[in-house]
Length: 99
Image 1 (cartoon, helix red, strand yellow):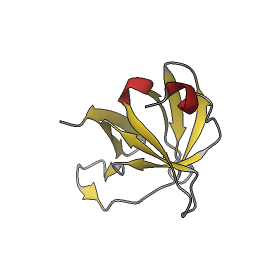
Image 2 (cartoon, rainbow, N blue to C red):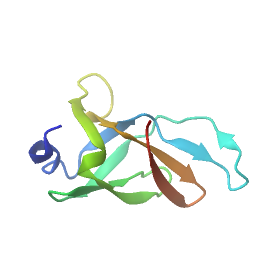
Image 3 (cartoon, rainbow, N blue to C red):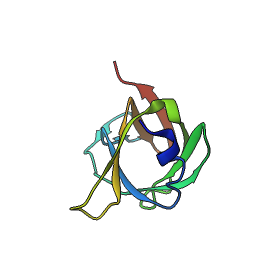
Image 4 (tube, rainbow, N blue to C red):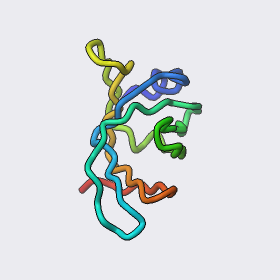
């Protein structure tokens, strides 16, 4: 993964892979939604992702990014392929490593 390239991507509209898992506060899993995320800010060590639809925002370490791939067909600028799974539960966000 090219950290230099990703660190210059503030403002880009991306899709994350794998798609974020969504849960109700009761723990029941909700169907996946292939949201567009915004790279709000970047540094050499992390990026901040925001989901305009849900209002979630959180920092993500560069070491959790596997690849940044351009998306020339759909409504986003790129795909961010992660080594981790984003989990949305109510207003909270967590990130778990993929095994």
